[in-house]
Image (tube, rainbow, N blue to C red; front, side, top):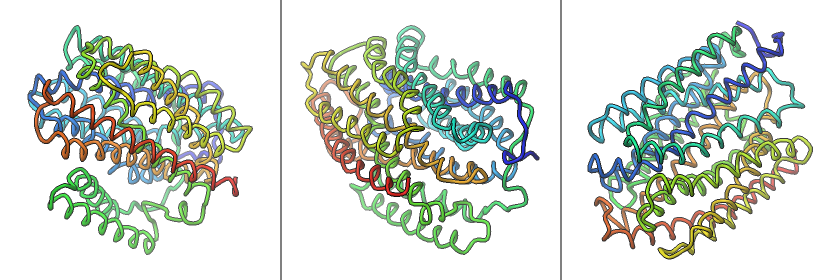
Length: 463
């Protein structure tokens, strides 16, 4: 096995790895954004209620979060390219399962499998890119890969809305099959080396199982806190995670290196900032898509056109933000970004049925500027604070933190839906209550975002 600490790599293969990193960074956000626009059509076709419709999105996040940290550690041991290829295979096959689903259970199963494949890609893509580029270019390449994420988010609503309107919601999954296959072939043909930095270490299987079960219970319980079973699952998951932490402290080869949190101030607070930011932002696309189609009465295609404004701004500003974070303390750039996002969320609280589309787009644009200024600088601060040999684990932790934030975001929305709407399919009679749910969600997210500015600034003492 080759190590990124000693490997000599050509410029062409270096560029190929960056292309692969961009392709894998594009796939998942593209599908997520496209799926947000298709959700009303899925609910109508399969007869899914509001809570189950939320699980179509959340099941993917939970599955990816459960496997990300173990896969990150395993990739450091057995090879990052190998795991990245496996992720593309699973993701592509899972897209086929989802496209053929005839009921909610099979669709959610497909989403779970997509989460497994995405976990393999999340845990290896960024680590592989950073392994072959020098530290002085870290912010630049992170900005490029984050731009690929936002291009996925940009094209997702437009293409998803167009496909859903013309060919039905299943086409949103069908299109991922050639995309995933193309990315896999490019990886196998263009990237010849292998990167592993923890050869000889053992994977903590028992710790991985405890982590996965505990995290599942915690997140399922969080979405059901209005019932006794949900509270029990939430508490049980929390206790399980505490037991997992104790296991990791005693383990010779921990799956999660706690020293990255407790001995590395910059990395620890970068994870806190990421958790808060994604908790405050991820559900915006989900809520905006439903708002535009339910309360504004727009078609999936027009809704996609409106929603594309946010990720387009993200894609435009991300390269600049990445370069800025190579020259300015990354935490300060990220804090400014979080402030912009919080202001955009405050604007969203005032959405009404009669609100003009210009105002809706303004909300999305302000949030897009904020998220672009936050994302790559925060990742630059985090990855720049760890050694190369730990890139896989650090990348897995960063990805898991992002997914946990996204799940908390969706979990808060599910909890609000449960309290205000109930377990019913959303029809015209529920539209006013849905709007109240969205406004309440935006308000909570804005408060979270402004509190998260502290986590971005406090790490500056060590940067």
